[in-house]
Amino acid sequence: MKMRWVRFADNSTAVLEEMNARSVVPRSIGGHAVLLVNHQDQLFLVKNKCPHQGASLSKAHCEDGMIVCPRHRYGFDLKTGRGAGLYLDTYPIEEREDGVYAGFEYFSWFGE
Figure (tube, rainbow, N blue to C red):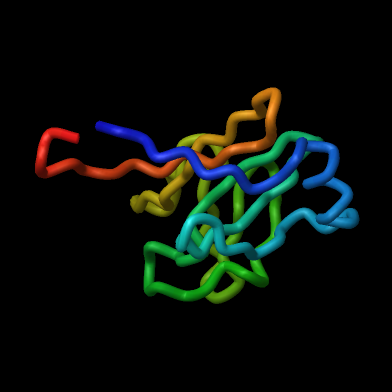
C-alpha cells in the first residue's frame, strides 16, 4: 500500500502551540477531515468521523489514551483505532527536517 505524505506544519512545537492547550482540534489536511489529538504531549491523527454512526468527533475528548465519541461515548484507541468492536481510521505523523507530515494510504491503479 502506498502512502501520500502531506506537510501540515513547520514542527511539532508549532502544532502544540496552535492547539493552545486543547487536546482535540479538527483540521482538514490534504482534503481529509481529521482530528489532531494531543495526548501526553504526543500527537495523534484520526479521522473526524465516528465509525459507529458517522457522527463528527470534533467535540470528542481524550480519556486514557482513547478518543471518546461525544454522541454515544464509544472510545477508540489513539494508536490502533480499535474500540467498541469497530475501527476508527488513524493516520501516521512524521516529523522531518522540513516539517510535520501526515500519511494517507492510497491505491494506484496504473502502476504509479
